[in-house]
Length: 373
Image 1 (spheres, helix red, strand yellow):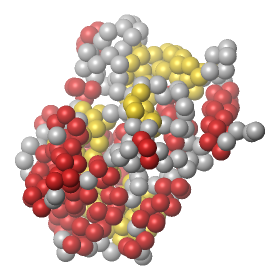
Image 2 (image 1 turned 90 degrees about the vertical axis):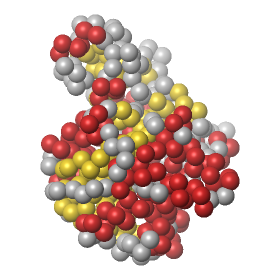
Image 3 (image 1 turned 180 degrees about the vertical axis):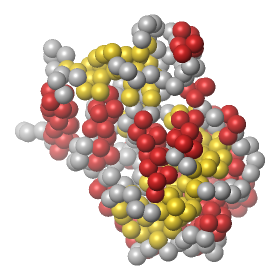
Image 4 (image 1 turned 180 degrees about the horizontal axis):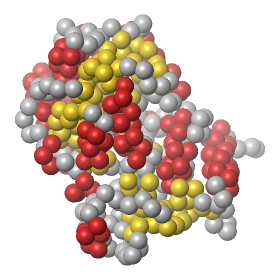
């Protein structure tokens, strides 16, 4: 018997990585490895046909996102989106990385109910298989929903992105006690993938006099691709706003000397593990977001930070408590995970941007932490 479809795809992914390492002279920077493992057409985690999103491992899924957990997430977020559309006089939403299409469905439904319907809902997603599932789920909203392969030249509307920045490739660095080494991926004598650290010029955004506080062996990440994404957003967003929901910290926490292991994490069948070199193409690879770097990238490119707060604060500001009162017991239990401190409420943060003057965004009306960035 030959290999099954899944095994054949896994073999093809490994072969592609081996070829890329060979082409690069035996050493592939980690951000390039992560890009291939997640996005290589037909083979990468987000580009193959495996199921990603769901509430149970028995479904064959790997992790759950807030919109799958509870429809109240999208209903609360819709209140912020509706305010932003109204204040900026726009009628378009653009979502990057729409996953299962659950958030798009919730937003379209809720914006209609709030009397702030959108004429266009654009989705930018690199995954062809996810697009197919999104199209099925959103069929009743056609022809308002449209898929784009790249940035529109100009955005007049509201951009939303839930768990997008954490899946952008990161550079891995290791402190050896004297210098920051760039971590890459090579191949050992038996053909296995291994980490290989080499001298480089990159370093974390930490003052020179604080470098000595790091413990030798510390591994951390820097996020040039996520920050470049926000700078690109600034070039295209002419009128409207942008809201990013993701897990992460401000810079002072991210690069605290006691955080010695970095934040890189993988997800497979609802189990987390720290080994991105095992099962490439079969599992998600993520890193927490440095929200200070994201805020600075936006500001330096001309955007205003509307606010930064925890997901719990943001959703409560957007009326989640009222929505919980209307929900049944089972719905309340699931939605509580969105705001519980030990679940998603505190680890997940929300940051908002707008071009020009900005406005008093509903989601940051209480508990804004912009001063902590």
